[in-house]
Amino acid sequence: MTGINFPDIESVTLKNGIELVVAKSDSLPIIDVSIRMNTGNTADDLGTQGLSDAMFILMDKGTRKYDAGELAAERDKIAMGVRMGAGTEQSSMSYQILTTYLDESLQVAAEILRNPTFPDDETEKFRQQVLAFLATIERNPAGNAIALFNRAVFGPDHPLGGLWTSGLVNGLSQENLQAFHDREIAPDNMTVFMIGDIDIATAKTALEKSFGNWKAKNDSHSKPVGDALQSVARVILVHQPEAVQSRIVVGHSIPRYDAETNTELTVVNAVFGGDFEARINMNLREDKGWSYGIGSGVQRNSSGEQSLIVSGSVQTDKTMESMMEIKREFDDFLSSRPATDAELDRVKQNRTRSLPGRFATKRGFLQSMMASDAYGLPYDYAESTAIRIDAVSLEGVNDRARSLMRPDEMTWVIIGDLSQIEDQVRSLNYGEVEVWDGFGIKLR
Image (cartoon, one colour):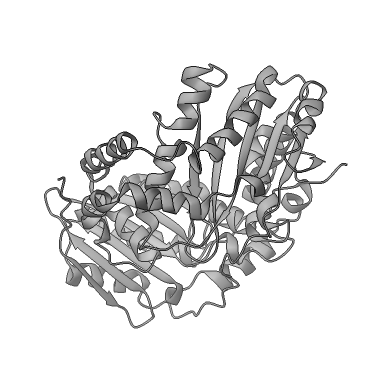
């Protein structure tokens, strides 16, 4: 059995509330740093969905000390490649740095996180980029397929149901970006993770130099994801003229994350559609040849209901037949063709043998530590992954599938040329049919 061994992990809390987590692994003079903030899309107020994404994209486009060009030059001096982005519940700023430049990198990070100015010219550049994207969505709404599914399942007023519109992007301003920043980004809402050539004492000293005098308190509007809308059979059609493929996203909400049963859920998904060799892809791609690739997945979060979805594109003239095959796969999994010993063995071997690759870099360990912590699990929870996978039984997999899958309560989002597919899709009677535009507005 493949074992994963985490380095020793220590943690401490600074006086201003910042939590510091350090894993010492000094094989190379490099440190991976990730600063996680407990805010994200769930902090967007009603009518401002997308503000969190914009704020994190624009935060490093100018600060009180540097304009965008100067800030880029400061990062380049120390080879500091920053990745920033908002997530559903949490957001992060991550980079890798030589040990000798840790202090300088934290000074730059503090300047970005503490003192962004959201210059009007940079906001305007971003606005034009988003408007160009929205123009593309008007022609190719398949790019919004997952977002439209989430809107249908969670509702338009839910943070997961928000979609960029021209009204939202035109409403971006220095004032509302700054207001979001000031209430959401503060030391008491922040955890700094480090792994590499560093110990807890050295890391704490460096962090206190750059962040220690920041005394702000957060006033976050972040909310739990909560529950989805009540599941009902429903079909959402979106017109994409002359599309040669139809994009299909189908699924339903499932219960909240549970560490005790999550491994079984992972195996269920892998058998059903999560792997290349899984049933959905082998059917529609390998057997029928109707798709270049289609599969299933679980949209996870730590504070509300999740989603089980099947997603992919199929040739236009096989849209109805593909929907029928997907529905049959769901039905059969719960009745005549439950998971088999051979499928379970394949998934166990694939998942176990892939573990060393997931942890081949320090960043792999760091991401695992952060993910485990986000779900209230020990930082080194992944050490027991192989044991947990091996403990999954065939009976457990099939019981889990029966407790989760609801083929008669699925939401279908079908994006394609409605002049060719609408009548056929309606004939299936898979639920009440609505026609939306690419931004989730009901047309009929």
